[in-house]
Image (tube, rainbow over all chains, first blue to last red; front, side, top):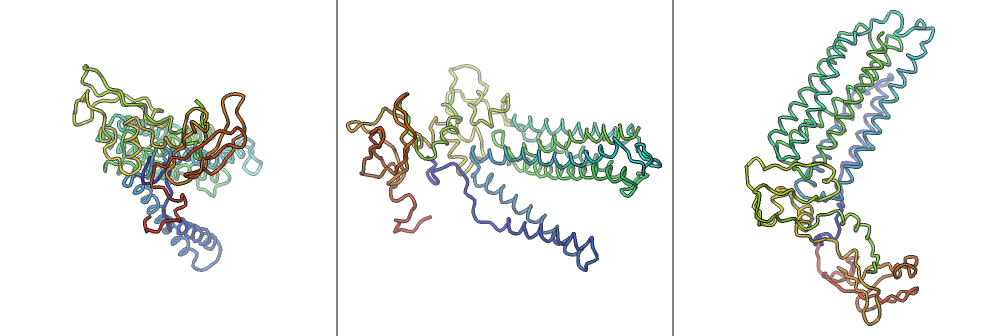
Length: 265
Length: 172
């Protein structure tokens, strides 16, 4: 039997991070509202809240890494938790983005008279889908292939190659983000330009935000792989990152087809 | 074999997924054998193991050590891995099997402490009944009120009260 414990589960030690995260979230939301309305100090509170939230994420997940990799608490059954928990989380993210794509379809499939009864609305200079969007989509898809390469490298025990593969994945992701940012900067329309601008920037913007989150997750995995945390038997964190990345990848296809391509013609 | 239920017997399902005894090769190829699947999660991937980067050739006669499978394993994960490689079920005292317990040949339930919650599901087939739960205490054999199966506790650990309140000595 597991002599020291009598069961395979992980009963975590008391931790301040849940409450600090909650306080950070409170500060962020209240500060955000204050900032968007004429209240003093909103910006300060908002930024403090965000910083605190990010700090909590850092220290919380650092504790998870310490408990799992360095202390060995993550037995097979404990691993099932994060593994099977990532899936509903990703599904919830899909639901979130689905809402924005639905908003886009809602407005574009039956364009109202205020925008000229046509889609794209009269006067909107849409981006040519055959230019940057058409380049960015395969960039993201290749990064998905690269993360699969990294996974196979980890499973085969080729640790250095896995690091290279993750570097490739992250580089492609950063290139994607760079191009998207450039496109945002050069777009002839803004978020305030009718419902087209709103739905375009919200849908692609939140997708881009998720790309950035996924990139950060993969960078952390790359660092961990470099440090030797990930073994071929046990790399739940990497798998979660890879699943998240595939989700980001697949989601990209929806706006590309519906917003960029169909929405532009 | 009549099975008996004990608390936390659901762990048995997970226990079943841990490794069968490691396979050993006869004299033959020097390649490392594919290690036994260690868990449901691990068996989800199709794996082609190749030699590690250090180019170590598999020693075909030596049993696998934890270091071969996961060099950085530590703590409970390591204990679990070690037991799996030795073919041992760490939590085997949680799912006892054996013939129907009688006064002459009681059903023995092992316990880490001096008493344990046990459930009796009855005999085979038609003799099964709804599970009856009871505390089985050291030195006090128990008879199931429905089917009269006879149970006896065997302490395989330090004994004492399971809630730890009888400890006079201080330890965590």
